[in-house]
Image 1 (cartoon, rainbow, N blue to C red):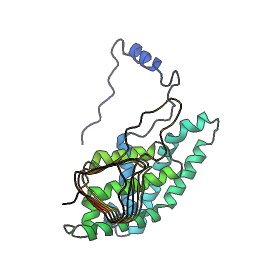
Image 2 (cartoon, rainbow, N blue to C red):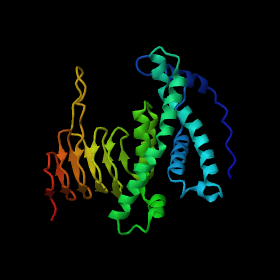
Image 3 (cartoon, one colour):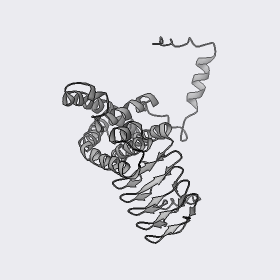
Image 4 (tube, helix red, strand yellow):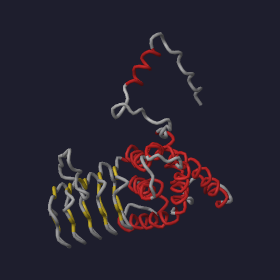
Amino acid sequence: MSTPRKPAQPKQGHRALAEKLLEVQENGGRRAGQERLPSAHEIAALAEGFLTVLFPEVGHAAATGDLTSALSGVLSALDAHLEEAVFAGIHRQCQEAGGDRCREHAQGITGRLMEALPDIRRLLLADVQAAIEADPAASGPDEIIACYPGLYAIAIYRVAHRLRKEGGEIIPRMLTEHAKSRTGIDIHPGATIGSSFFIDHGTGIVIGETTVIGNSVRIYQGVTLGALSIKRKAEGAPPAKRHPTIEDDVIIYANATILGGATVIGRGAVIGGNTFVTYSVPPGIRVGVG
């Protein structure tokens, strides 16, 4: 193990430079709050903690004789770390609203997320089963949980989505950005994704914030579920629904691009690889499939 480096002694002039940097304040003079957001390392640890408790049979918790005791210990540590992260994420908004109940608010968000973990696990086990049924290369659930980047990205998304729904700020996006850095799969925590979702291979997938995906949907690498170009106007916000709706039992093959909030891919449709779709597709239709 390498020895931690000691902080370097400031050179002459660095203090003055630091003061000049702090004078350049964000948003026309408002200095960032004192609550530090978690580092990338801390977010990665949170993500791994969630994976451990959601799939306890396959993590280091399973290495002990008493899985329940091991899992309860991981949950206790995860609870404490998550509360600190959530508090940092919402602190600025709490302070600006004139309230001094940020800690209580963070505890409530954290508690509701922790209570939702069994429901998230049920969804994820359905995702694992979908992978087993869709991928003949899968040897079993252990391989899918331990090796499939698609499941990793889905698992972190499902936690982040619920955390965002419960009122968490910033941390949900940090979690999904961590998953993207690890897998190449970009799922916004605001997207809505049904059960039995399967991502095959996965690299390069983008799923936008207002995307709605139904049940038993399968997508392959390089797929984009995105928005048409929208020019922001000073007097108005972008439309609430910017990304497509994918109904149940749809298959979207590699490198397909589907854009637009009004675009609906009907139930059971098949979207072929390398297609560019900005229009709705009726149920059962095969688009660009040879």
